[in-house]
Image 1 (cartoon, rainbow, N blue to C red):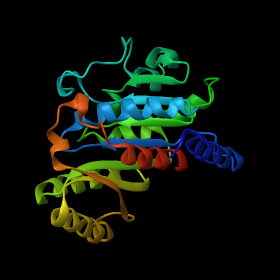
Image 2 (image 1 turned 180 degrees about the horizontal axis):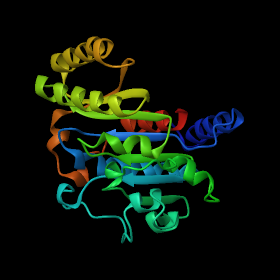
Image 3 (image 1 turned 90 degrees about the vertical axis):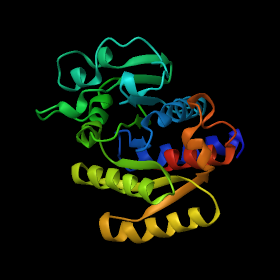
Image 4 (image 1 turned 30 degrees about the vertical axis):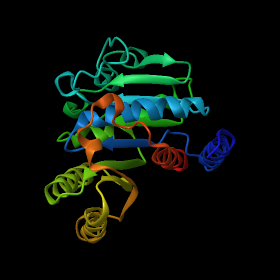
Length: 251
């Protein structure tokens, strides 16, 4: 896909979203249940690519400092995002501007919020900046935070194809579904040949029994990607990057 084609997709998606009155940014949650830090370089790269295409993005980062595998925070953080959502500090104290079109919020404690509060996406509509997308690099075991970010919620899991990895991914999906309503379920599979085919069939059958809707496979990568150093884990995958961007732009 050329830059012109990518811009056309972005313009069409944004135009339709606002034509039909959905002024709140959609929330895209990405999670690798077996290795949560693996979403950090992916969301970092996707955020910057989307801003290059003219989108305004808020990156919500749930990955705790001891789970980041030395991947640094992109900026100094004054307050956890939950403090802004709870109304203890202003919204611009809970999120930080990384570039004219990219903002960042560290969200380590949002899952602990007990009182009702306006979701993040709705809070952003009064910020004076029109955000197009909220991207979440999600931790496992804390699905209570997802509904705090907004709706619709588009959930994407990164999973290996071994039976234990698939079960772990299904468990994350079920935990998320129990706490929020997912508009879409997507998965990126790490596997090859027969193992990949088996995983796709297993997901198709299991989704009908345990999830509210089908799981669609966005693409696949070699299984070694799951254990690769973070800095190069998602490099050299232009086709997958384009598929992910199209999904983010059209939903």
